[in-house]
Image (cartoon, rainbow, N blue to C red; front, side, top):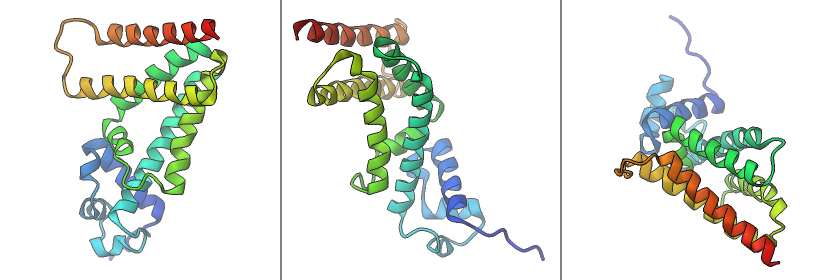
Length: 191
């Protein structure tokens, strides 16, 4: 009889990531991950403490992956060029990995240190690309929140088939980004 492969915490994470990516965050359950690994559900608790911990692991993985992809997209860019590359990169990630994107939005324990650090990496990356606008930190955070809301709103509406008017969604997204730029430019010229 063949011996089962040794299950590691990384293998548990990989199985959960694959399930989330294919089926969405709610599909990440103890039963589903155990089945994917070919083990009984109680055996999974040798590697994780709870379902919340498992989902947090997936969220951290997703945020770290998203950060790496966004950092690559904006490398060498700044200002408008960086914001456009960042925004389109974010949209692409959500389209390519809708289940993972969803998992990172529904954070089971947002105060967890590792999860908070992964989230803050993206915020800091966002603030860095906005540096040419010379915003004080508090205003920069407001802009980052606004940009994230704009991106997330388009992602959510697109996923729900909420854009029924026969007009290119990409054009609407670009138009709204340029409104953001106009506001940033006006803020720069005011100060």
